[in-house]
Image (tube, rainbow, N blue to C red; front, side, top):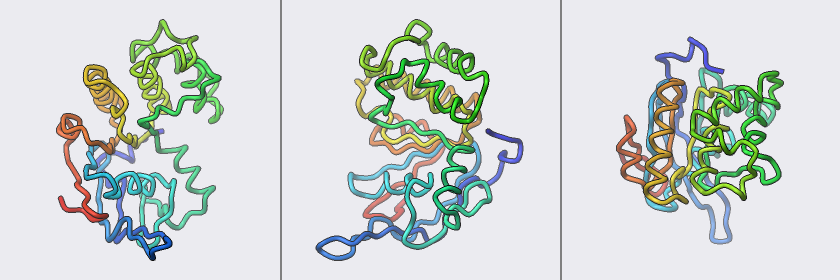
Amino acid sequence: MQTQSLNNISIIVTENLSKSVATSDGILHILSSIDLIIKSGESIAIVGESGSGKSTLISLLAGLDTPTSGTISLNGKSLTAMNEDGRAAIRNELIGFVFQSFQLLPGLTALENVMLPLELSGDKNAKVSAAALLARVGLSHRLSHTPQKLSGGEQQRVALARAFVTQPAILFADEPTGNLDSKTGAHIIDLLFELNLENKTTLILVTHDQALAARCQRTIKLDSGRIVI
């Protein structure tokens, strides 16, 4: 959950962050010497051609992957010094995700999908909080519907509600409008920034969508695993 201590500070700091993997053709350098400072409450767009390292970068920043070298600090804590349990704990404490593929659980209703992260943290008011946020994204009439009964735009709104329901300090979104038509995508962008503003969430977006990148306070461009802007 967010606290006052998160305000006006550097919530993400990386130094000399690099990621390489061994392939049959030798070592592939995915990211090289990434130095970043991201302030609490900032909105950041990460852009670049396919294969430039965008998704790898947010995976590292979120503790879903580990770097080959360099350091990552989240809210003053060294992510790179933690084991997997430590990284999982800080993800639960600070981070929300929105993915291009929605990643909703097909056997759960919209309400149950949004309740899930709250239930996992032991929140006794999970149902009330989830229903309120689904109402906020215009889905009060879809609470009992499973994902296969929802349109793509509705599924992404459920995914947005699930990401914001824990009031994360940092929200990562990987191509959040990539599978949506332009009208629906524009609506999702509006919702994303409305919720971001209301919750003072640090927003980090990977996108090819120039309209979405333009809405962010800052753009970081990757080219062949290096920052060029």
